Length: 389
Ligand SMILES: Cc1cc2nc3c(=O)[nH]c(=O)nc-3n(C[C@H](O)[C@H](O)[C@H](O)COP(=O)(O)OP(=O)(O)OC[C@H]3O[C@@H](n4cnc5c(N)ncnc54)[C@H](O)[C@@H]3O)c2cc1C
Image 1: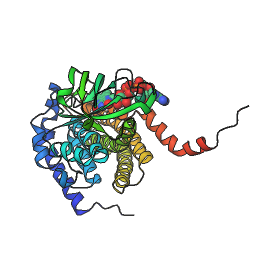
Image 2 (image 1 turned 45 degrees about the vertical axis):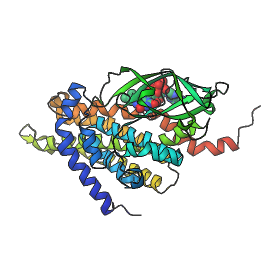
Image 3 (image 1 turned 135 degrees about the vertical axis):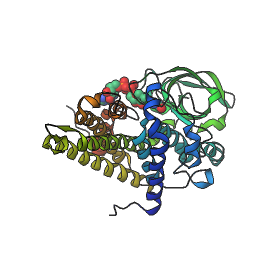
Image 4 (image 1 turned 120 degrees about the vertical axis):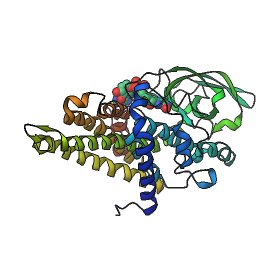
């Protein structure tokens, strides 16, 4: 067992930290206040290779490993979780599945513009009536000559209003209910119409859009993986994507801890620094412990993924624990700052608002527990059904 990052991983982490501190953190509060997507930032991130960290160089990426990508997400999210989710969805939920499931023609056509950051990616699975139960989606892809006509609506699509490439899921077999009739498609911005921007509790520097498709004609070359096997693409994507969301949650929690520690060492009450009170010390100790545990779970899941080993339950555990840690500990950070923590003068109230969604997207905490339990019990439950009277 080796807990050391490699020299390359440390280098990329240091670079991401520097960029986060200089190019993101100073503006994060303003982007949040103005609900502004920082369009000008992403070309800069692209220049540094951060829009394709773990994409092989031959496809326009930086050629680093998956753990390096997770380290970058953690650092970006420490400064601004909205930027973190933009890069996470772009990479984990769009670029990587095209790389994993695309034909060579699709890989060389769609991946390089994404990996070089010339285009932003989006993942369009959720619909108004299908969230956790994604297999019940209603968007249809009707056969039309050698292709399809896609009709339907998608809801809460991160990057929806900025993306040039969409990984979108539609039902190609209306006769088959549930996940088996679903196929995955790679679409362009011209194929979708953005109908609404969501107003959210947090993550205000990211965009979350509703989309409509009205009889959009696509050729066969837009089908990703096999017809009717799109749900497998979606589930494999979420297996990896969850590790990215765990890293995002970790970055938010770390930022909250850093702010709480700094404040506790300065603020004086009753003639003493509040960090001298055991009540505050224990809060900081609990925060640091949970963040450490979340980090170990997240890095382990990333390591398993890059080894090509199963990581479904490990990714779900990392996301579950890191997101709940972020929600709990950002609240504790506000407590350490007292009334100041509740104001916009300090960033911890933003961390608190941003943290909540990590328990919801890419599978809610309830769904993560379901995924973990299925891994723990699934085979036995399937192979040894209870005899019913
Ligand atoms: C800011 C934001 C960005 C998003 N970005 C994207 C995106 O880019 N692409 C995309 O496709 N989607 C995106 N989503 C959608 C997100 O993935 C869904 O919100 C999420 O999967 C949950 O679905 P839902 O909101 O419909 O909740 P529901 O599925 O309606 O769940 C409601 C409640 O019921 C619980 N529940 C549901 N089923 C079960 C069950 N079987 N057992 C126990 N409890 C259950 C849930 O855990 C939850 O507590 C985004 C959402 C948000 C808020």
